[in-house]
Image 1 (tube, rainbow, N blue to C red):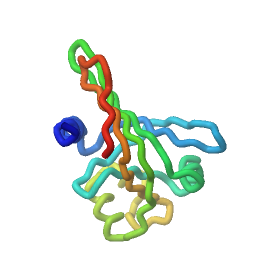
Image 2: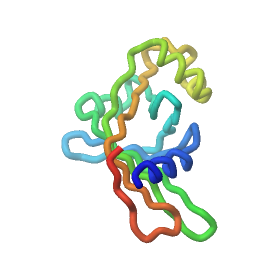
Image 3: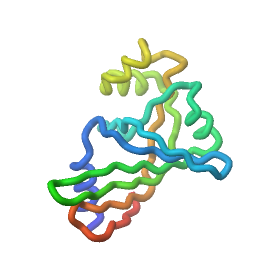
Length: 140
């Protein structure tokens, strides 16, 4: 059953997907929109080295993302909880930079010290298809 749900989740995500990302710092939650990079290599988020979320993640790498979906009459969502791991491997940084073309709008080069790339390790996902009444929670 969970493989079927995982496949439904993966098929509903675009290669570049707008999501809301929640971090926490000193007990205060912070939510902001970001682009989830859905790559064959995993799920990635990119940000600047001086951004507030970078400092928040350094203290607490646990995050939750939420992606909304809808059809003509109903809405649903994907909520994934997990941990962000900063990627320092330059080959992977370059690969994701190339794959997600919008990153060139922020950093002129994938070796920029200001370009911070995180891989999100999903641990648990809540999934509610548009039209369903309840979400299903599965370990990832």
